Length: 140
Image 1: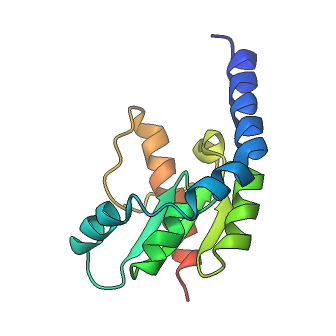
Image 2: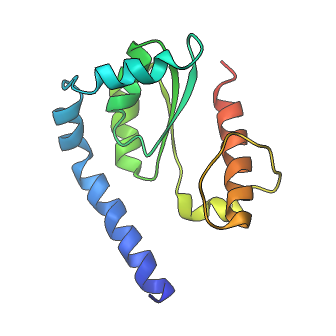
């Protein structure tokens, strides 16, 4: 697929998430169906863990993680999703980040966990970018 077509597909995806952010938030903020899974997940972590919610959307699961005791930092590439997340879940921190830009976003390798990414260079930049972003965000 030519580069321009990939950009168009990603841009279309972003426009979709921007357009549906409020609807998704309205549907999922009051829906606690995943709370047992969230509690189970958090039971394997230290008390008050720091959790990075990648692709957090409008922040509904970030809110649940926080209500269960986690300190959450959410990332999403949809500006509107992050705007909704910030409005509805002010106890969390959120930032817009486009994963397509991560390969040029960082220069230092600092491990931040195991990520299953195919391209070793991209993995190097991804880890460094996340480490810097999370470190800056969790200085609270």
